[in-house]
Image (tube, rainbow, N blue to C red):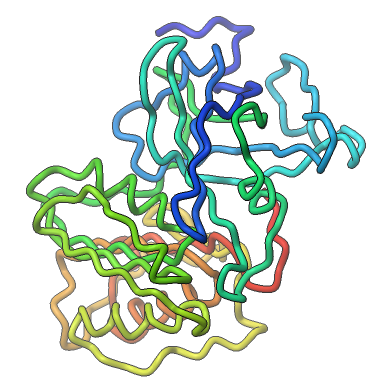
Length: 316
């Protein structure tokens, strides 16, 4: 499609909840609708496509933005009381077409097992009903938008790892993989009741890890290294070394580290592995060190993303 000079190369609109479902104690699914979502779409598979949602302050209206290209600067320029709260989410699915397009988003309601605090997105999700409204920023059909980190080479052995905040992204990726994809997915969730039935290729083994009150990430490290045949105690990451905005992919490092270093796996055949790991920043940091530093996984074979930090209020 052709985008005129004045049209934004993205979709930014006020969307309404047309369906709200409590999937489990920790997950709420909403279907969002708006006429503008007829133009919502990605170039190729959406995989772990990120979007922005802006929630109103409790009892207040949504912020009003103009038609300019620099929407973020315009949003920041609003008085704090009028801005609402911006958070990042993954597209779980897109249903319908044209004016009937529905963007499906799964939201986590933190705190169900005593870990994590209920922030603005969590509180909104817990009270969302038909008619609730948010601002939505996402990709426009035919326009390169970014926000997709999953980029597994063909025929790679997959390793997908995440806590509850990464479950929607992993679920979306699994549903879009080719039928002959192979590997494993480990999903840690607060409670056994949070386990979901997911569509996935038959050669991708999906393992759910309910914490049931244990610390965040306490089950992931052992499960992942056990899967790789490299059992080890969890890597302890000092508080001062936790990178809150940890984001490292084959093409980008939030720490500024070089991605051109070649490494050799130590006693483990990881040449065909592609790892996608997301969740709480301290947990992700520990897993990154175990795989890259201890097992020698080439940094270009992995995406590590700190979606949140326990005890820290995260922004957009």
